[in-house]
Image (cartoon, rainbow, N blue to C red; front, side):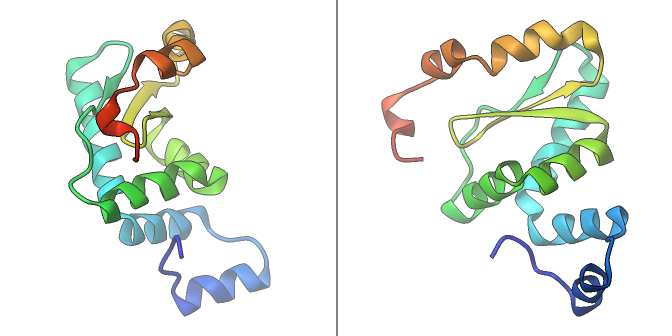
Length: 130
């Protein structure tokens, strides 16, 4: 299961549209490792500037890795996180998460980061089973 959904949030979904703030809060509490990773990268991007901020340290365990995968594999979760933080998210190798500003001036950098070429260049034997 990806998210710990409260009965109230489930009821909201059953009635129709879900309040995005409630959904984002559910993601925050359900996927704390992923949330903290994204939050810290957004803060780093704001402080350091540049085209993007990324994490290259593998998660401490499979539970944390699973949280990153669930957060970024779901279009609904990923989209809500991008809107909440005001960034674009990119992902490689089961743990290399990057945040990009929504500024069109970094579109080329984002395209290179998410290219097949960069995916191949960022492979290593120790990440084979991630």
